[in-house]
Amino acid sequence: MTGSLHLGHALQLSIEDTICRYKRMKGYNVLWVPGVDHAGIATQSVVEKMIAKEGITKWDLGREKFLERVWIWKEA
Image (cartoon, rainbow, N blue to C red; front, side):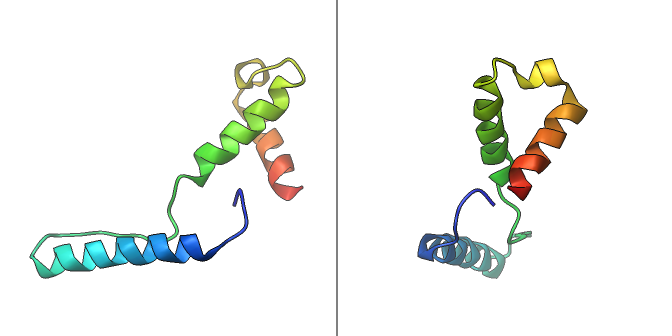
């Protein structure tokens, strides 16, 4: 998670749930998996900005080292 949970999260999930339920009632085949979101993209962006201050990019680190940095940031 890249931030604290707030009422906006509940509102957004309620809206998504309502739309999916409506579509199901209309006969559409709908799969909605709550909790799956774009947080990975936000986390990646934060870590990229952090390592940029060191003068390096995710490409300089490579996949495994970059993921290590992501986990270090997440734990902090």
